[in-house]
Amino acid sequence: MPIYEYQCRACSCRFEEIRHASSSEKPACPSCASKDVVRLMSAPNVQGLGGPDLSGPSSGGLGGCGSGGFS
Image (cartoon, rainbow, N blue to C red):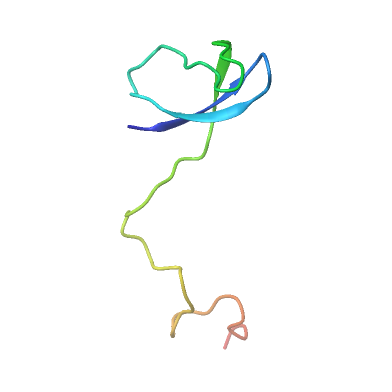
């Protein structure tokens, strides 16, 4: 189930809620219990796409930051 981010219009509280994607009912604000909330756009969390490992320094390759420029 996805995690959605909401902001309450009554008290400006921001909160996250795990909801079914098909659910149309708005959650109640955990701070003031108002149902006058708006869902915010948030960046998706994408993992496991099989792309390059960018976690450490590269050995070899075509250069990049600190590679000394072109040769």
